[in-house]
Image 1 (spheres, rainbow, N blue to C red):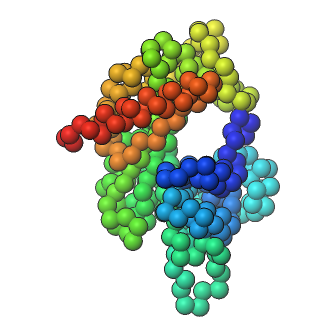
Image 2 (cartoon, rainbow, N blue to C red; image 1 turned 90 degrees about the vertical axis):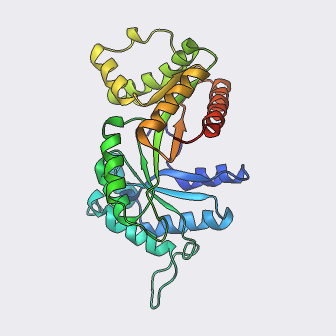
Length: 288
């Protein structure tokens, strides 16, 4: 898709992991219906071999594209999102210990046990993650409507596994932090414009920020964007801290995945710095 730089997910992960020392780097995510589980096992097994203990593999079931592109990716229209649970199990087996008489092996890959995550924006992913005993990441940063039902479903149905003994949930949140609320809101306008362009069928690079969004969207588009991006912390450090604190309290999330599509690189770095400072203050507060 125009404006998205991570189509070759494993290549980008390798670049980021190679330029860092300690952080975990993962996919958010690989749309498994578009790929052979064996190929993904080999790619992420290679990454895990190069950067041991630092790689995560997030999996989604949406094709994320039209049928023509999907066919070009996998060349098999018989493989659909309905096969997703089977594909996850196949991938899990390929990354696990080699079994007697196993004929298909991922090299590298077998025995690496790369941690898997199930991604989702509905209760389907929550149910699958619970059934398989895998961590669950909810895409609340752009599709928050089913966040709480999905988290409740996941925790209620969770079955312990070799990877995880209790539920572990992550939720996504857009963070646009600046020295003032007005500055943060202006930065946020880039993502708002990008959402409008996507819904209009005209995706493209991230637009520069504007001072007034009302000249760019209709009332219906404003409502749609407001709903889709309602899981956002936009404002000064104090405002961002309060919003993230409230989100953690509401969801009971074990992790937050923050994203900030900010046009100016220096402003983006500063936003991440503020978010890290907020994270430090929240982590220092006693658990309730």
